Length: 146
Image 1 (tube, rainbow, N blue to C red):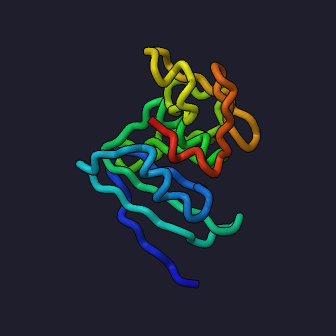
Image 2: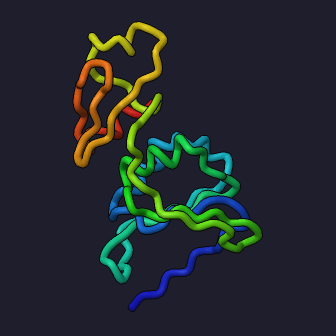
């Protein structure tokens, strides 16, 4: 078995148990400015199969960022690192709703021409706009993040 060594981060965030080949999509929706180092491991073997891992130095995630990740990678793990130690470890769950983090693709939706925060009900394989009922499949979701 090949052993991989990754330099531990001093302070920041580690996203673990991400679905295999999802790391680049997750980095895109997080819209990081990359002022701090980011390391990714894509499609690595684990006990549960293949997975991705993202290491983000000097970055604490906001609740909105965690919700975005939950929509794309439910069941992954969010680790907060301080002085090279895990100080908080949480499972990322699928949010019940997504408020003001997704743009509605329906051009006739009121959220596209009025200053109203978007609100989507989160379903098993899609999200649905609470104003116009436009559904977006989870496969297409990353194209619509704010």
